[in-house]
Structures are given as C-alpha cells and as structure tokens.
Length: 125
Image 1 (cartoon, rainbow, N blue to C red):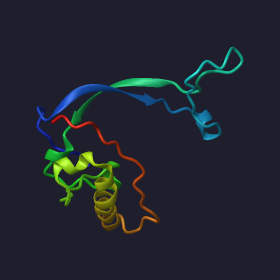
Image 2 (image 1 turned 120 degrees about the horizontal axis):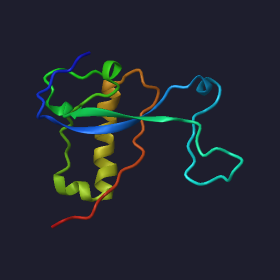
Image 3 (image 1 turned 45 degrees about the vertical axis):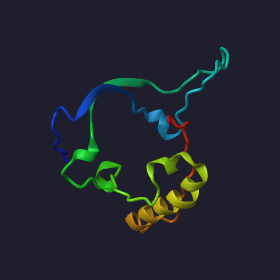
Image 4 (image 1 turned 180 degrees about the vertical axis):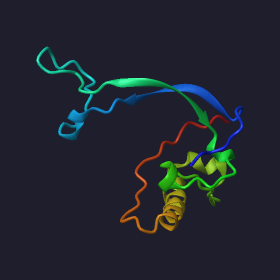
C-alpha cells in the first residue's frame, strides 16, 4: 500500500533497524544494557541506521489498515474532558473501557485485549 501525503506533513529523521542475520533463526537476538565482561558479547545484533521521512498518519485520506500497515488510526470520542486525563481513576474507569470496546470492535478475532499501562503527567494550570 503506497500512502500519499504532502511533504510538509512530516519530519525527516533516522531509525536504527536490526540487520537480518541467519543465526537469529536459532538464537534469540539480544542486547545487554550492562558490561557482561570479556567472555560474553554485549550483543549479537548489528543495527543499521536508515534515513526516513515520518508522516502524520492522521492526515491521510486513505484508511490505514492494520493488516497492511502494521498499525491503524482510530477516532475515539471519549466521555472524558481533557482535564479528566490528569486523573488516574477516571482514566482507568472510563477511558480504558472505551478503548477496550473500540479495539474489540476493530479486532473481533482477538483472543484478548488488555490495556496495560498509562502515565498521568503533572497539570500545567
């Protein structure tokens, strides 16, 4: 699926991709966040930097399908006000069920849908 966007609707950046290696068919790729010493390699992967253009998917006129793009964009009309999102309890008791219903409707074949975590930031008012 080739998506069409205007060039000003995104940003140039770079992303590191793991280079495919046949050894990963039998050995799980890993990178350690600590020095394991001289006997054990810190990683068994090679990363390659790629320049990419990240587009704003919300402005696409095309429907972005999960099975084709690896992601989907949904619109959710929540009962919460913007200020309510700063209240942990309101998020878990109202927004979580709204999201779960939206995702259950969108992915009816899913065996299970769970919302695992959210962060509530400090208010700026």
